[in-house]
Length: 299
Image 1 (cartoon, one colour):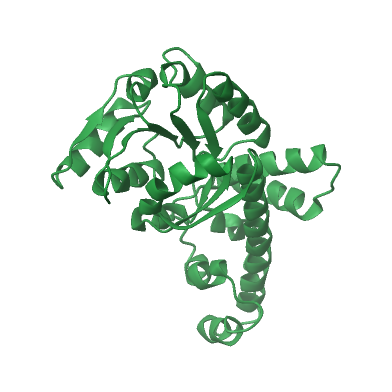
Image 2 (spheres, rainbow, N blue to C red; image 1 turned 90 degrees about the vertical axis):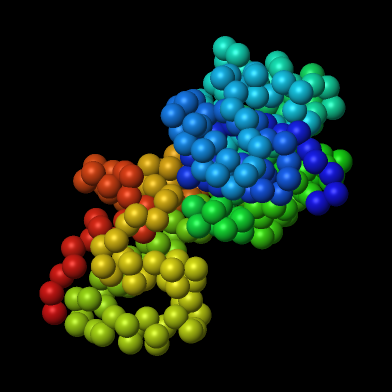
């Protein structure tokens, strides 16, 4: 990398923490903020151990001051509004001609509202939700779907490259979030079918490894099948992206669909299935825990 960019990163969870680390490893001047200070201190210790210069800020505003680019990756609409617009929020501290890139999965309506507020301050905005899970974040192989102007994308893309395998400029502000909604709808539908297929195979007494071998090379193949079949069979559900977060994302997707006059019966049904998983104590299990609501049955 030829140039160093002064960046701030708000949110150091299972996704944001590795992403901010990749920015530091790529040579950028990184200041971070996390609402839980202990996590921020742990993050600093982990990346400082590589000999990287990384700084902590006490507030979102302090992190944003003087930054050329501000990245956010928090939980939901309310969390994002808090760190950007609340007490000591980052947006008021951002400089004219700086850039805000939001990696949180939010509603498209919030993305559009934030873009308008940024425009009033002379700040560019990109909604840039990510896909690829914890492993994608840690390996720097995320897929990023973006909404914003071509000019903003030209600034952001070389910086985001350090933690992305694919960056797609989908359209205007809000398009990134809407594409992420489509992404989550696809995942939910696939996991619903995969869960039922595994239970059928188990109840019929099939050799599950042979069944996987037989069907994973044809039209049924999917990322979820390749990466979750064997762990779902073993009732292992600790892979980062929690059921609680999927329900949040599906809620945004269903809301957007209703606003467009659309019916989304499959996504709505799987959303209710995930509600059952939550009710059974699986809210922090990853999304493949959808299978846990189905009895195994016997041949």
